[in-house]
Image (cartoon, rainbow, N blue to C red; front, side):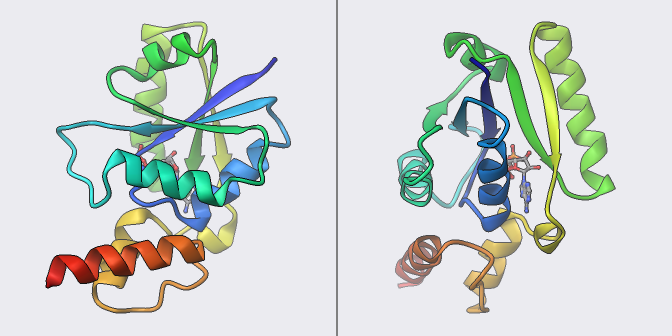
Length: 162
Ligand code: ADP
């Protein structure tokens, strides 16, 4: 059984993330979306909120499970008997940081492989930060995030501003 972990902040999940998850279901038997719960990293959405949104938008994908983790990714991998890390690669600017992470994880756990999936071109400029920025300025984020995420973003940003 090929179990892969797709780790990230997912603050919030975008259509770019979702595209990677969907494509990964064609390759792996089980995909665990690992939602990083790092108290040092401030996020707009809490881990449970991020998890709920991912659960909602992946509910039709049987092979996909969602879990939060704190601590080392490789420890999370080992506790789930997973040995493949999936990361999305958007532009060459991702390469430096991503290869550093992959090489460090290789050093810590040689049995674990990192696999990069190239983003589909229509989402190659997309990340959670730009979505949050556009939403906070009341711009249109339709087609960049699933509808439920758009709604949660508006709620969160609107309630915050009150
Ligand atoms: P992190 O804080 O770990 O970078 P992110 O939630 O920003 O968490 O990203 C998680 C993973 O998803 C990373 O591998 C990132 O490269 C990938 N990713 C982010 N945005 C996109 C996108 N638009 N298309 C494909 N992959 C993406």
